[in-house]
Length: 398
Image (cartoon, rainbow, N blue to C red; front, side, top):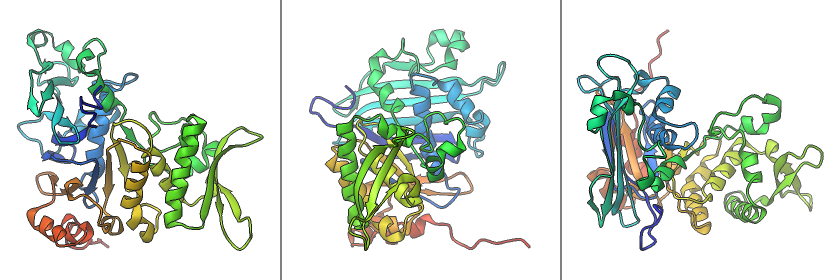
């Protein structure tokens, strides 16, 4: 299986390269650990960085996926291609998947573009799947375009990673991409889902069916996860206790209940529609961190709706619950929160900085001067965040 090598070492994305993808004319980050924090001001491309990983998921997923669908869902190739692309307009995503020792196990490269003549349907310009052994590349299992595809361009409308008949030799890599999870929970959609109604968006990125997700989990696993969440919540909100899953006796709808201790001996029980937005989003994050698998978990600005004292403890709480549940998931977190980045437990290797420029956003890791400041005891909020923010002030035209 991909998720373990012969020594049982777990895998994660260790290198990520983009070319002509949305904000990024070119950029590469490597040596990524299992917790990645993406810093940058508004419009620097934090969400677009995560969307490149989601794009691979959408191409690889077994049902309703594929290259053409993934491109179309994003408004076509014109919406994906970087505005700074000039002579070379190919869009390229390249990923290394490695073990805990940072030895590369697989490399996947996907390039696509619109042909200069004829039908304007995007075609694969490059697709390569390369296995590695002891950190060294072996012969590529897939290397496209091949001779047959040079003669028949219709074959280039699909990737091999989306074709069951073509991906048997690297099926675990396909599953690694396809099982990627992205949830940017919108509390109002969860709290008032019955009143709002309507269609649930595919892959449920906004958590509309989060309660159903919990309900589908086996009782033993569900109770264990909720117990860990309760324990984690109590370290930052001591008044919370006795988190449990219940079903409405009349409607049968699933609910979460928790007790808030106060002056009354038994406290007061509340359901999820009474939780604060921040508490509900935090619970969803802590649940997702416990789900099994090694595919990436993508989190957008988890600090939203939380006070700064809680935000400052998020990295510690997330790492603790991930460890206690023995989850193997690598997570990518976008943020520009000073409180979150003030935590001293953040691995500097996992800090990725996005900086807008006149030639597209720049992707970089921690600089040597920033690393020296971190080594001296400063936090990422003090050593890195000021350099990741725009200078100057907003100007308003009246």
